[in-house]
Amino acid sequence: YAITLARLGVFVFDIDQGYCQCYTAATRPASGDYCDTLTRRDRSCIRCNSQAGKEELEILTPYKQLHINANTLICNQSPVFKSTTKGVGADNPTDPAHLTPFQEKVMLGFDYEGTSHVKMKYKVRGGHWNQGRNILFALAGSPLVCAP
Image (cartoon, rainbow, N blue to C red; front, side):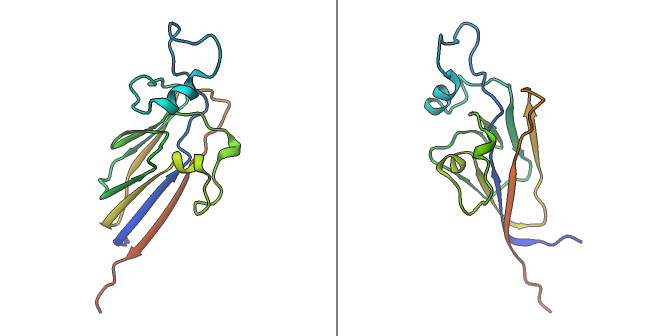
């Protein structure tokens, strides 16, 4: 059986990547973490398109509204959203109701109305395969009331 929900909120947390490689051999700086500097400054994904360790979330069911932090560290190419900054295990969320400022910058929310399902694809591109990736989903909904 499928239950149609009047409203459904889908939240996806921890869209970051295992490591950064946002430069070519010609643009690599002599020192410093170029990727972290670049992604904080340029979130348009034009200059930081490396596939190394990148998380991608593709939303296949059209949503009514997107919730994204004004200072997001996620590349918004709706309906595809890509990580742009490195995360570590210590910054993984454990409670979606209590997020750090960094965790708020690597999460997305989607509002749906009158739906019984939501389809999405989650991918990890390239990267170090000896490390796992974490992602957290949370849902909030209100079902339609059926008349007797």
